[in-house]
Length: 383
Ligand code: COS
Image (cartoon, rainbow, N blue to C red; front, side, top):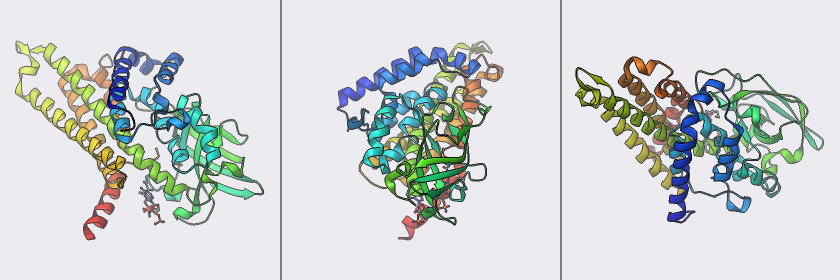
């Protein structure tokens, strides 16, 4: 454990209280306006949520993976937009620097990412390179002491508020990992511009847009780790961790959906009794509970394995596949238990049903997780 048990319990408790008392009451407003009130960001900063996974050396809490997923489960119990605000700093927006940055890069950015003063964003996906990340086209051409970036990144989480982008760009030819490098590009660099905010099916308040590089010049010191050709493998390692974190968020959301379902089912009466007394409703609650518990166990097991320093590429994908599909089924049952009320915006489950759809898509679709799992399993069992 990176924290002693008592401190971890206090942090979990503080996060739970913050979620329940502060964030849950704001859910409807954020869904309506698409804006998270600025004070919420400050309160999340004060709790240390932006720096969960960044070492104390740089001002973070330095949680290990088990500790991080336990906090992510708490954050999962409310609208995913809140988690998303700190999510890139905890995960994909900081971890490339943690894993592969030079000392100068770590010193320059990690303290401000850990405090939440700076928002980090991860720019891998492109209009023609989604699941097939190796085929990305954004280029970085060396020009003396600089690189010049050209290309478009798509669906970039937190881009509208980001101060720093980890950008995967091509420094070589061909569909191979060695051809891709990672650059740390600051917002405001001439040649970097943003598209208009995406209008999404759900997760209002979580902001995404295109990031466009048009002859964007960055100093050679912006090359992550000072080494060309390592960006793709770093991105994959970042995603191995991110997929576990997202799985934990899905566990928290599933538990919230079950709580909403039980609350409704015990209050709603039909045929002269609460609908929770009907076995067909109970079956839906039972299936959701069993599946959420299975996902919780998987995520904790994979996180502990990662903390022991063992490879967890396959386990992370197993968790991402199971937990994201699971929460989709749980949300569907939650709407079913709510009946017609589950289809109207007054009830949280209507919104969560739309929100959770994204989990099966970002940080690798379910189909990409299947592909990774199958490859790793075939390798392991063939040995
Ligand atoms: N950790 C470290 N290195 C990894 C890795 C991992 N988890 N996964 C792949 N690599 C390395 C491979 O070892 C390989 O290196 P070598 O060239 O030295 O052999 C290299 O990266 C290329 O990998 P691979 O040959 O497996 O590439 P493929 O195109 O066949 O598959 C997938 C790569 C499909 C797994 C990858 O593109 C992917 O995850 N796509 C989804 C992208 C995604 O999640 N997007 C979400 C956007 S970010 S929110």
